[in-house]
Image (tube, rainbow, N blue to C red):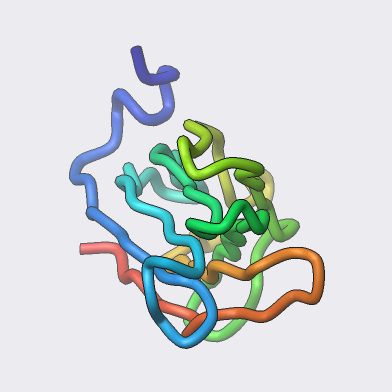
Amino acid sequence: MLPPVAAQAAEATPFSAYGWNDLYQNGYSLGDISWSNRTAYVSGDVYANENGIDAAVYFEAFTNDTKVGPTEHRTATSWSGMHFGFTVGDPDKPGGINNIRVTVCMEPGHHCGTRRRFDKP
C-alpha cells in the first residue's frame, strides 16, 4: 500500500536506468514515480551487476534545474535485487518539483550510467 502522499498523486511515471556503459548487465533499476506537488514517491527495484558487483540507484529531485532536497540512493548487493519505496523532494520548499534524475552506478568505484531525467506529467 502506498503512503497517503503517493495515494493522492495524480499520475505515475515509469522509470528505468542502467549502469555503466548503459547496459543492464552493469546493474539497473526499474519502477514508478508517483507525483505530488512538492515531493514524489519513488518505488521499484535495483539489481546488482550479473557478476555480483553492487549497484546503487540515485534519485535527485529538481524544480527545473534547481535541486530540491537531498540525494537519495538504494544499493543492491546481489543479482536478485532489492525493492525500495520512499519519498524524494522537500515538503517544506515552496514551488514543488517537476523532474527527477535517476542514475545507476556500479559500486565501489562509482562507475555510472547515463543520468536519466523523468518529468512530471
